[in-house]
Amino acid sequence: MPAPTQLFFPLIRNCELSRIYGTACYCHHKHLCCSPPYIAQNRLRYTPHPAYATFCRPRENWWQYTQGRRYASTPQKFYLTPPQVNSILKANEYSFKVPEFDGKNVSSILGFDSNQLPANAPIEDRRSAATCLQTRGMLLGVFDGHAGCACSQAVSERLFYYIAVSLLPHETLLEIENAVESGRALLPILQWHKHPNDYFSKEASKLYFNSLRTYWQELIDLNTGESADIDVKEALINAFKRLDNDISLEAQVGDPNSFLNYLVLRVAFSGATACVAHVDGVDLHVANTGDSRAMLGVQEEDGSWSAVTLSNDHNAQNERELERLKLEHPKNEAKSVVKQDRLLGLLMPFRAFGDVKFKWSIDLQKRVIESGPDQLNDNEYTKFIPPNYHTPPYLTAEPEVTYHRLRPQDKFLVLATDGLWETMHRQDVVRIVGEYLTGMHQQQPIAVGGYKVTLGQMHGLLTERRAKMSSVFEDQNAATHLIRHAVGNNEFGAVDHERLSKMLSLPEELARMYRDDITIIVVQFNSHVVGAYQNQEQ
Figure 1: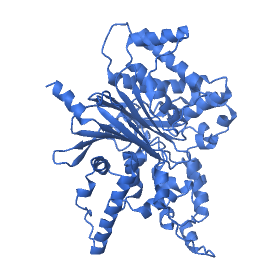
Figure 2 (figure 1 turned 30 degrees about the vertical axis):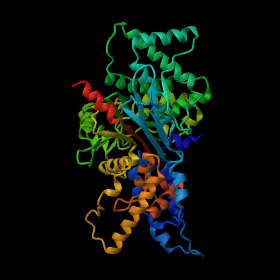
Figure 3 (figure 1 turned 90 degrees about the vertical axis):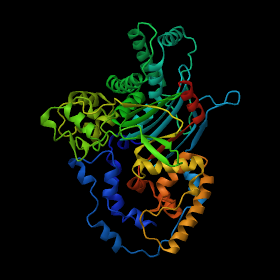
Figure 4 (figure 1 turned 45 degrees about the horizontal axis):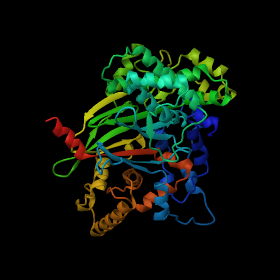
């Protein structure tokens, strides 16, 4: 269980920078770890408020200090061996292949690969994948936590149940409720596809179930029982909003069990973004809250790859999001609602689960904190009110839903947290996955991106291509292959083992300065089944 300060004070890892810089960043990879401190600041979900700036300020002239320090011995270079690199990259990989019936795969999904590479300790990203058993389709999602992992963990466990319940017909909801009422076994709603590290919180299962049951009871009461087609977009939106509302309500009500009481508060005061795909035949819906992304890989007639974006980032780079925020608050807050490209100058994503410090009134925050456990009441972050906090809520978990009808040329979907998109362009992501899945990467001409290269450098590139070919055979997972490129690519777009080794060798205190947690799901579509759907309608 992480320490309370790590969960409730999102700046704490930043505050460690002063200690890190003060000790002169002594390591074997000085050109990597002794970069200017702004790198870390740009990657943080939260920006330190001036009140805490003194805790997070690096020692003055720390760079000169590192240059002036002398050591008795010269450190030796240390690189991870290829097997060690592979062991790290493959530690969290997971693959699922859709089972065949009578020797045929009748699903529009062939299967998926997923993987995670942590930068935070513990990792704040989560992932989920499940098949809907009472309705059709498959759910896949990535969740990017901030201010700790509590909220992303809760959302990864609960959101798919809320979506599945939202998609159930009235008769099935009644059947489930009657089974609970009479103590009979419940119909299974989801079949989970989980890596052993993807755990569920047993302590909170009863609480989570009771909240979910209240939700389906309300759906039963609202539904007249008349058969009607369920709108997937509406179901996704309702599920996202209801789960966020339950997270907030559970924190306000509390729990007589001290452990659960603290847990629900941790979940509510931390936050998480979510990017979820629902695939049913040729119908693909993507529901996105925050700045993770969904990218479709399309193979053109000439064999080249193009990227189709199926989600929009909810941050300061999105003009429509900026306009939405300003319209939701008085005109006199137009200059304060977003400052330095952050919500109230603090939070990067403009939509997220949890983060009640940006949703609750000041009075409600004070009341919950004062009546909460000592760990909460004694924490400076929880008692801190964001600046210019006048007309909450400033944050919403309502997703933006995008619909796409699959075509035979749509080969795969990449869902990934922003740790991937910060390091790689979308077109490179799609090209690398496409070439990996089709084995066409060795036939493409070497691109040098406008660089002038010598004959020796070209020989080096050809050598790297040979090594790259062996790495493809090493990777049996498309998400792993993509992470290898995201962390180890050089300026020519080839994996540099030395760079990859150095990046994976960084200690926990420094890793977050250079990248974020990376979580990827690559969904491969069945072109034959998709084409058959298309032919049936013609």
